[in-house]
Length: 207
Image (tube, rainbow, N blue to C red):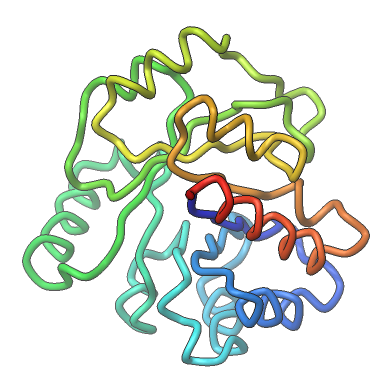
C-alpha cells in the first residue's frame, strides 16, 4: 500500500521542518492543502522545501504552481471539477504538455467509483473511518458495500478519513490501494515517529 500525507489545514509549529524530515524518512507523496492561503503564501511555502522533494508534492489549489515548480501533480477539488474551462485547460496540459503530472481527486459516494475517468491516477474516498480532525465527520460506509465497490472499480482508491496506525491493515483488508493520513499524523504528539510507523505498516500490507 502507498501512504499519502495531507498537510494540516492551518499551520502547525515548525511545519516546514517537520515536512522535510518526513520526506527524509521516506514519505513519497505530500498533498499540500491550504485552502485559506493566497497564491503568494503557497509559493513561499513550496520555496522553503528543498527542490529535491518538489516532485513529491501534490497541490490542492493554484494548479499552475505544479508547472512553475515541477511538482508531482495536482489534486482537483469538487469545486474545480465543476469549472468546465478550468478542467479543459488542466486536461490539455496533462495530456498534451505535461504528461508526467499526476492528477487525483476526492469522492464521497461509492457510486462515484463506478464512472471511471482515466484522467485520475488515484482518488480518495472519504470518510472511511470516523474522522480524527473533524469530530462530526463519521464513516458512511458499511464493510460489505465498501468491499464490493472497491473490487469492481477501475480506480486506484485511497482511504481517507480517520486513518491511523490502528486501522491501516483494515483499510488494506477492505481493498484500498493506499491510505491518506491527516489527523492520524498531525494530531499526534510526535508526527515524525507516527509517520515512520505508518510507512512501515503500509509497506507490510503491500507484501
